[in-house]
Structures are given as structure tokens and as C-alpha cells.
Amino acid sequence: MTVIRQQDFIDSIEDALQFISYYHPLDYVKAVEKAYLKEESQAAKDAMAQILINSRMSAEGHRPLCQDTGIVTCFVKIGMGVSWDKTDLTVQEMVNEGTRRAYTNADNPLRASIVADPAGARKNTKDNTPAVVHIDMVPGDQVEVMIAAKGGGSENKSKMVMLNPSDDIAEWVVKTLPTMGAGWCPPGMLGIGIGGTAEKAAVLAKESLMDPVDIHELMERGPETTEEKLRLDIFKRVNGLGIGAQGLGGLTTVVDVKIMSVPTHAASKPVAMIPNCAATRHAHFHLDGSGPAELKAPKLEEWPEVTWEVGENTRRVNLDEVTKDDILDWKVGETVLLSGKMLTGRDAAHKRIQTMMENGEGLPDGVDLTNRFIYYVGPVDAVGEEVVGPAGPTTATRMDKFTDMMLEQTGLIGMIGKAERGPATVDSIAKHKAVYLMAVGGAAYLVSKAIKKSRVVAFEDLGMEAIYEFEVEDMPVTVAVDSTGANAHETGPAIWKAKIEELDSELAK
Image (cartoon, rainbow, N blue to C red; front, side, top):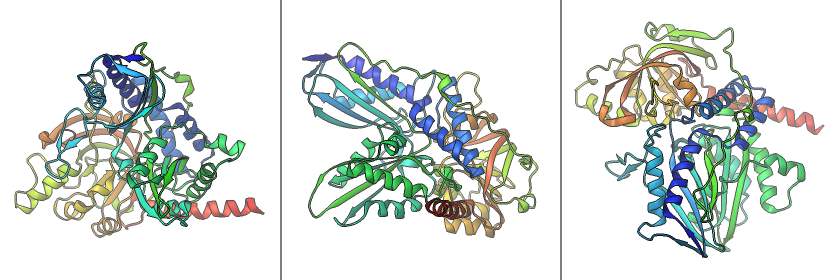
């Protein structure tokens, strides 16, 4: 009988969550490097360069890869020969305690994103608890833990379907993936769970994402099972869609496809698909009674030496002087460097502004959006001499329902976020001759270095969802929707899907 100390388990959870907040799994880094080297789409190549640079910076600075430090998911497999030194805490409570300590660590505080009463008040729990914990009793005398921090942008794109037994799973994936947009921050991984019941398929999909990237090794040796054949089929067909990094069009949309399956009812074929984003974060360790887990830090030499330089035609913009007329000649796909002052705002701030406008109160004191840009972001708290913690963009589509009101009533002329906008929002942007700019999701620490000053100007009670004023210098963004309504997230993938089909046709000759 192996005795596991509760404190060792809690310490290991805390250490693992800190570790994955700033260390990408190296297998993912190598996979993105491989994709970067072969990429022919300049927009996608630039996005992957920023992801790789951000990854190295986070590893060096021990600061989060992404401002969305995730909801904790933990798979705990407890050997039947294990006992605990104390019984006053459940496994769920021990995971929660490790999570609480990790997310409130003074040296590297992680953003608290978990809200209680999700159907009502949605009040932040302040320490990112509770975690989502899956517990299995297994043979043996050790405790195995697989733990991940999953961002909302990618988690929100999860899909589930009850297929007929004769239906083609790969066909459903290829049909469904384009409907997910780019809010899951490709290039990433797809986890697919098959079988069991609906909820079991979803758990399988999530657990499959804990495995290392190995699709190229599978290609070299060849598939031996139904699942391996399906992985390769989906991998090829998904990358053939041309969605590319950040949804801008390119050769690589996924760096791997993972599949787990279990038996199911003869009348059923439950399938769940969950993507991992560019901030893929997970760790795997065992406890054998000898003490807490030791996670070996990777060497910085393992990261590729990637640089990113702006092109000669890059547009430099002073946000303190820009007018509505100035943005009319900005073109979709163009790289822009922003300097000057911008305001921030996410879901809660937009909702409160809408309520104030409907009540005739106008904008809150200190907030003037005339000829201004708003950045969809909820930053991590600053530490030491930082102006702000990692501050990458959040998924812009969540603000779509507020956009027409904001453009119509506040004087706003531009928005900055990640991923695509919905058709009605694109129409509104064109109607109001505004612009939508895209920052790279998964490059939060890199983006934060462009922010030179930060202060809260309204709704301080909303915490990371408050309205801040950022003063930035040379913050890189891409024109994703210009004032005519031209949309990079439609044109880019369409162009690259056609190019990939052409390349495949030439190779087949």
C-alpha cells in the first residue's frame, strides 16, 4: 500500500499550473516551428512567428503565454493500492487548493476567470476555483495526474453530435470546423472523442488532448488501427480547408488530431470535438509516495530562433490623432502599427454601457469613444515593474451583439480583437465606415510589451473586465475588416483552400 501525502499532491498541482502557464509543451513548439518553416501564406507565417516569439519570451520571463489563463481540467487516476495520509480533504478539494495557490501566486499571479452562478449573477470566484476534476480508480499503487488550463476562446468552440452509425466522422469534422471560426486560435490540436454516451464522448475528447504531438511520426510508420487511419484522414482534410493560422488562410490549421474511443450503443455514434488553441497548456506527472512531482524545466535552447520584422509597407498610426476619414483607405490584410491611447472593454463592460445608454445616462465619466479604438482584452495583473500583465485579445464575436450600438451611438471608429466577426457585424462596420483590427491570439506576453502605460478609467469593480486606457507603442495588428466590409477571414481561407487544391492536383499527376 502506497501512502500519498495530501500536501505533496496539493504542491504538485500548484507547481504544475504555474509551470504550464509559461512553458508550452516542447512537442507543440516543434510542431508550430515545422508549420512555420513550410508556410507560404505571409499572414499565417507572421502569426506563427509571433506565437513562437511569445512562447520563448514567456519561458524566459516566467509569465503567462496567454492572458486567458484558463479553466483548470484535471484527470486523476488513483491506483487501487493507494491510501492518503489524511482523509479530511477530498481529491476535488485538494485540486482546488492547489489551483487556488497557483492562481494567487504573488510572483506570477494568473488571471481568475471562473464565475459562480453561471446562469445568474456570474460572480468571479477570485481564485479560479473550482477546477473540473475527473477521477478514475485504476490498478496499481501510484497516482497519475494529467492537468490542463483551457482558455475560453477554444473551449467555446467545442462541438458535439449524435451521428447515425453509418455516418462518416471525418465528413462531419470537415463540415463542422469552418463553422467554428478562428476564435479557437489555430494552429492547434483537435481532440475527438467517440462512443460511450454524449457526456463520455466529451470527456474522451478532452482527455485525448493530453497526449503529445506525434502525427508526423504516425505518417512515417503508417496507420495500424481504425483510429490512426481516421486521425490521418481528418488531419489532411482539415488542413486542406485553408483556414490557416488565426483563420487568415494558410497551409496549417491543425498540428495534430487526437482520438479516443470506447464502445457505444448499437444505435448510437456520439462524437465530440474539442480544439486546443495556440496556448496549449498541459502537464503529466505521477506520485509514488516519495514526495511531490518534479517537473523538469525545458532548456531555452530548445526554442527556435524566430524573428518577426514589419514590412516596408506597414502603416504606422497615431491613435491620438486618427480620424474617421483616415481609416477609409486602410485595406484588408494590411499590417498596422498602433501608437497612442486606446480604451479596453469586454463582455461585461459592453453590457453595462448598453444599459447606461438605454437608460439615457450616456457613457460613464472619463470614457469618450469619439474617434477612438477599443481593445477587447482582459489583462493579467501586473507584477514588479510591469505596466500590465500579458494582454492578448479575446474573441471578438462575443461583442458582436453590441457593435452596432457602439458604432451608432458612441463615436467609436475601430475595434481590436481576435478571430472573425459575424456577417451582421461586418455589415455594420461597412455601414458606419469603421474598421476591425486583429491582434494575434496566443501572443499575450509579446503584446503586453507594446503597452507603455495603463490605468483603469471605468467599472473598476469588474476587475479584469474593467475599462482601461492603454498607451501603446508600435502594437502590431492586421486589418481584418476594412471600411468597405472586405473580410480577411473570408478571403484568406478561400484563397488558400483553392491553392491547396491546386497543389494537391499537381502532386497527384
